[in-house]
Image 1: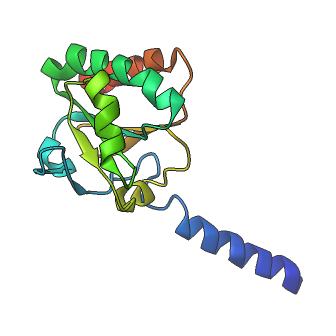
Image 2 (image 1 turned 45 degrees about the vertical axis):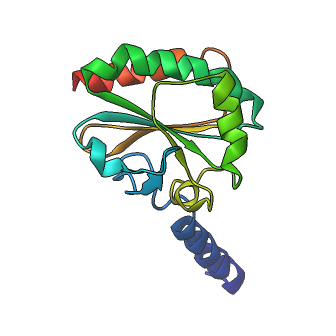
Length: 164
């Protein structure tokens, strides 16, 4: 093996270890605790044994704003069946999210990741990013971005995980 190729392999391996290592499909969902709008802390572990959809979003993101009411419908529909939705706002200034939510209220918890520590744990590279975790705490699905109709895919995945 020549030296250039060997160095390339090492660099690629280091990048793979640093990117996506903690939020890969089939791996345990990284635990986190964040404040909600009332200043109470909410932990992912609070929802052990449930199917959890974690939606990373920002108020400036058009697709995030578009999908928020649809996510709320999913939360209402599947909540009684062992499903929880967590919205994680990634903006430093949470008042922007609060202003958006005043006009578009949701019934699921909104958490604030003002320092982007949790979004880094989950390798959030696009807005919105949606992560679906099974009852055993394993990441089963990751979606980057949103297009109209994606909520149907979320629904199918949620239903399948609820049945497991």
